[in-house]
Each structure stands twice: as C-alpha cells, then as structure tokens.
Length: 91
Image (cartoon, rainbow, N blue to C red; front, side):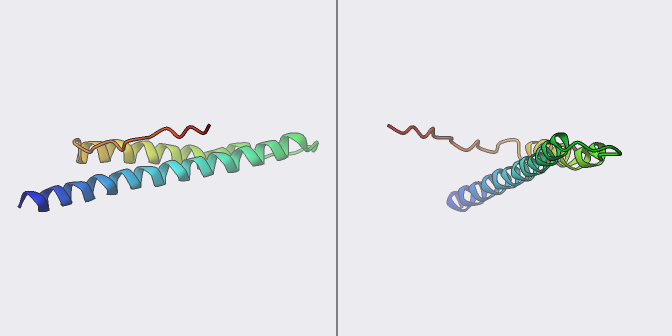
C-alpha cells in the first residue's frame, strides 16, 4: 500500500509542477507578444490610438491567473515536493 501511495503522491506532485510550468510559459509568451507589439509601434511614427491598453490586458490577466493557480495548487497540495533544479554549466 505504501508503494501505491508514493506513486500517487509523485504523480500528483508532477501534475501540479507541470501545470505551474504551463501557466508560466503562457505568461511569458503573452508578455513577449506585448513587448513585440510595443517595440513595433514605438519605432513606428504615426498618430492616432495605439491600443497599448488593450494589448497589455492579456499578459496581465494571464499573469494574474497564473498567480491564482499557483496559490490554489499550493493550498490544495501543500506538501508538493519542489522540483530539483540542476544548474547547467558549460566549460
């Protein structure tokens, strides 16, 4: 029974870690898109509305959802093992 519990715990820990990684990547992609649009429009000399407010809404919302998911996942499974991050150093 202990082996089955350890397997279930490991699966749950991995699931939460991968979910958090997914939202982190979605947030990073959203901010990247905003940065690309900002640079493109900043270098372009033109008048009129530029839509920065609308464009920044998406990455802000994705970031807030990611933070909420992190908090909920931490409360649902407070004993989640943190993944071991091994630094990669090249010679």
